[in-house]
Length: 77
Ligand code: SF4
Image 1 (tube, rainbow, N blue to C red):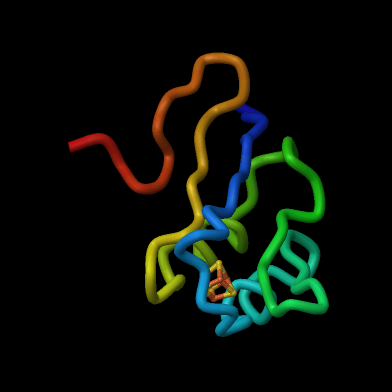
Image 2 (image 1 turned 30 degrees about the horizontal axis):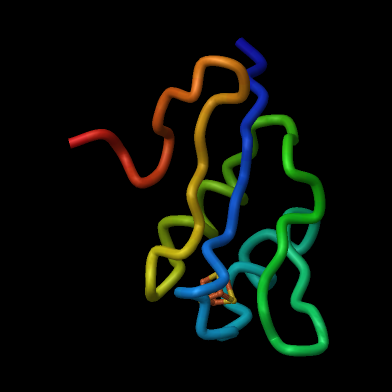
């Protein structure tokens, strides 16, 4: 099952730690203001992207299934 994920970074929350870039160098990039951006807003599901979302110290990374909008991270309560 090859899900496509929609990846967003809440830049009002991101503190620019860069941990997501370390976890998923293909998935995230820091801009000159040290704010994280997904490299692509919709991408193939990847463990590294999930690990980055789980590892973000402020939970700024929101991952949903593209199309259905089903929560991937943070998981639905
Ligand atoms: S890990 Fe979280 S806080 Fe750190 S740069 Fe990435 S999105 Fe921002």
